[in-house]
Amino acid sequence: MKALIIDDEKHVRDAIRLLVDWGRYGITSIHEAKDGQEGIALIQEHQPELIFTDMMMPNTDGAAVMEWSAKHAPASKLIVISGHDDFRLVRNAVTFGSIDYILKPIEPAQLNEAILRATEELRKEEQERSRSRSLAMELNRLKPMYVEQYFCSVLNEPGTPAAMPAELQRELGLDEPLRRLRAALVSLELSSPAVREKFAASGPDLMFFALTNIVNEVLSSRASGYAFRNWGKEQELVLVLWGEGESAPGPILEAVNAALRDTLRTRFVFGLSEAASFPQGAGGAYEQAKLALLRRNVLGPSSDYVLYEEAAVKRGAPLLSFHEYEEQIRFAVQGGSKDHIQRALGAWFEHIEKSGFISFEQLTLWQGHFELTKTLWEQRDGDGGDGGDAGNVAPAGEELTQQPLRIPVTAEGRFDYPAWKEAVYQQVKVVSDRILSKDKERGIIREIAKFLEQRAHEDITLQDVANHFYLSREYISRKFKQEMNENVSDYIAGIRMNRAKELLGNRALKISQVAEQVGFQDEKYFSKVFKKWTGCTPNDYRKGHYGE
Image 1 (cartoon, one colour):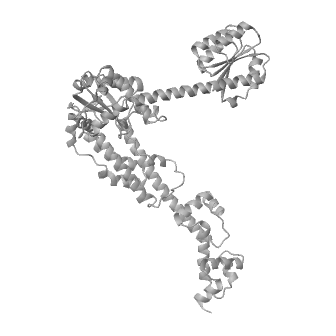
Image 2: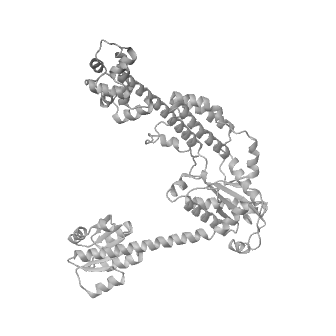
Image 3: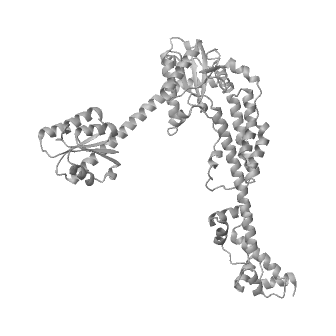
């Protein structure tokens, strides 16, 4: 919350600041004004929840501030701080809803008590507003629910069409039973970045609430149809069009897009069915609208809608396969060269561009192929399917490949082909970098293992290894265990014990000399470790393997 202190005496403003534990009341920002005129300007700018005001000030006095606030900032709470015990002033304060009238010099307890009352009232009022908003949203959400339920059942269960109930007909403003309609469909997978960002925090429910309200305002004003969220199809917004919407859908959909552009700064492309009988043909009309949207050319000219009969012509065109170019792209990924990756992808992009046609159906197919291929590349060339760094924090860039490639859309609602190509390249490059990084890590661990083998007889520590390779002990410990399936200390001990077994074959060497040559200064400790590893003492091992 924010507070504003209005007083022409600086020492009074300073006193109020010092006498209050602002954090206790949830007040994080405090502003000051030296008269009422400046105070009103700051109220307009910062909209403080709590206002302290003196009554007698130059230019604009406290009574004027309170009168202005009552009209323009009624949610703010007022506390009067005055040096005048005047009934007229007190009456003004009460008239405009002041929480308290505190006389100077200020009594700290009275000031804090007034602030406590004010903040409690603010919180109660905000809770009440929140409840009212929630109730209004819930009522608005529930009111059309039975309409949505009816249309969803008609569209998705075409075998059991039901005549429209009379009360539903009245709710939709229909003078006679609905006999014909068209279906139009929008996929929110192709929504613009502006829409995604606007509703990122609130989620899809509020987004659909906003979209259906905007679209239905246009449709109801022309008595031309109804828009609703298709239950069970999370990304679909369906429009059923009748009247002018059925006979001349073009101007209606243009008006819908104009409203969306004005309100949300975006537009959509609608898949549009042929006219069909209702309710028998409603399910078929929905399927036509869906196919029209799936098969439209996203590289084609911008339009508000694509007709089913136009999209159906393109169905004969073969789908361009990503798999035909996968091998040469994989070779480039293995090599890690930026230029090679760009050339390999470029061959695929060139094939796409020569065709001049990409449908949403093809994009969806490529998405599936591409996500599967990325996984196979990493399993085959990266961690060999052993899970790599599973359970650890993802390295920089890894989150890019863990998220499915999203189809980019411009602010105008068009498929952003250049951005899509760049996104494909970036994801392929990240996979390549990660594979090469793991190969490099594997090579470093092998070097560390070789270093340990050469110096196992020395009193070497993990810190010595870290210093030699300019790596952290934690990194070496974790990566060594992943690659070698044992920790560094056990690896060193294993080398020492294998070397000790060989030296025990030389009967000229005493046990103490064998211990010293493999890095143990204490013969007893060596014998203890040797027995732990082999199950017998050094002497017993010598007798058992090399005779008396």
